[in-house]
Amino acid sequence: MTDQKDDLVNYVIALGDDSLILGQRLSEWCYHAPFLEEDLALANVALDFIGRAQMFYDYASQLEEDTRSADEIAFLRDTRDYRNLLIMELPVGDFAFTMARQFMVDTYNHLYLQQLIKSTDKTLAAIAAKATKETDYHLRRSQEWVLRLGDGTDESHQRIQKAFDELWGYGAELFGMSACETALLSKAESVDRTALSADWKKLVSETLEQATLKIPSDDWQVTGGREGLHTEHHGHILAEMQYLQRTYPGLEW
Image 1 (cartoon, one colour):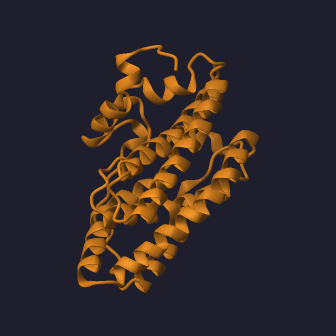
Image 2 (image 1 turned 180 degrees about the vertical axis):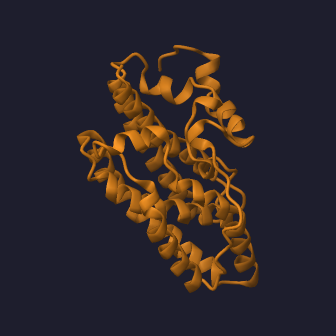
């Protein structure tokens, strides 16, 4: 493949990794959510992310001329080969932590997908057009929960404030550019994530203020996911997620 095509493949796979890893995390709430309706809602959101990952991996497989299937891309790589942002792989924590992370990610996705729709790559633009409809729903849900928990009981307020304090430093990575993303900007195939930062912080801060929550300080940040440098939690996700594929290689269902 040419360098330009390599960049596109790596870019598409990274977008798939974001969706797959977060979808896997959200699926852990199945049968564990606070009540039945929320159990079903979280499972549906998880399926949306996993379905989105499938579309990105299918496209990456096409770009690689089917040398790897979408399933092989998803399940047969080691942790250093994944390029998901670190916030996606953090353990679910309590319900407040999950909703705080989801709100931060949903707000980012809302802004990101609006720009990806404009990509000169027609396949990426089509995936973004479908995903943005799901994301609008995801954002409404997570924003409502932030407001409800923040302006709820003393305990719910304390828990979600603690969650944002613990997550805030991971938000900086949402707006860093990898080498392949920067290279693809010349043809308007990728999105300039740095340009989304101000709008993201404005939207998130407005909701936190409505929820009577304090905006955390920007005195720390963690990055490395796009370079394959992950937290210790990433390997545990893969151990569970890849079990069948590693145990029964090539098995057809």
